[in-house]
Length: 287
Image (cartoon, rainbow, N blue to C red; front, side, top):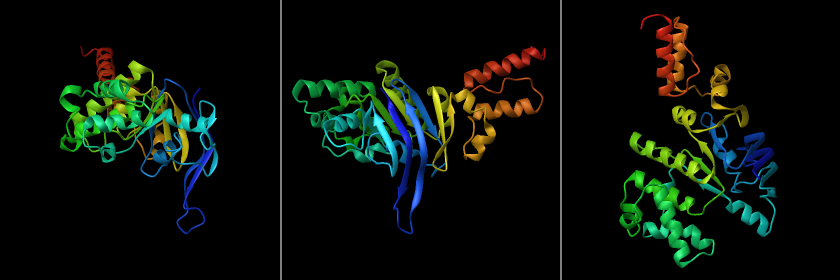
C-alpha cells in the first residue's frame, strides 16, 4: 500500500522545438502515513513530479501506481486509485468557484455520490480541520474572505474527500507569516490526527525541517538526495549544487562552528539551535 513511481520520466511538448525533459528516471515510494517534503530550485521538476501521483500527468516513460493500481490503466480500479490522492496546488484559492463556502467544500463529496447528512458531515469535518467555524463561514461567499481564509477553504475542499494521500504544492505561497503558520499548523494537525500521508513542496526550509520525517531533493528533474532531514541537510555541497540551502538556524550554527565555537551544527529548529548554543557556551566555561 503506497504511491510508487518506477523509472518515471516526463517530457513537455515532445517532438517540437520546445521539447523539455522535466522529470528524469525517478523511482520513489511514498508509504501510508509518511510526511515527505520535496525541495529544489525553481524548474527542478517538483511540481511535475507530484502531478504524476494522482494521474494529472501520465509519464512519458515509466509507471505510477497507487496501492498497487497503475494510474494509467482504464477502468474503475484506476479511477478509485486516483481518488485516493488529493492535490492542493499553489494558490488553491484560484480553484474556488461556488457561491458559498459550504457548496465549494461540498463539491468533491457530492461528486463521490454522497448527499444530505453525509455531505454536511464531510463539510463540517473539513472546515473544522482548517480552523473555520461552520456556523460562521458555511453560508458566506468564499470570494469575500481574506486571502488566508480562502486558502483554507480550498484546502478544506480537498480534505473533505478524505484522501489517503495529500499532496500540497507550496500551500503557503503568498501568505503573510501568520497565515503561513496557520496553514502549516493545520497540515501538521491533519497528518497527526488522521494518519493521512502528506507530500509537501515548499521553499521554506525551516518549516520543512520542522514538519517532515523524510526529505527529497530534486535537481534537474532527478532525485539528488532522499532521507531524514537531519541527514539531508548535512550534505551541504550537494544541496548547494541543487540550488537549495539549509535552514537559517543551521547555517548560523555552521558559521559559529567555523569561528571556533564547539557547537553542534546539525540543529534544524530554533529550539534545537538555542539548546546547542547554550551547551557550547557552558563547555567553554562562560556560564
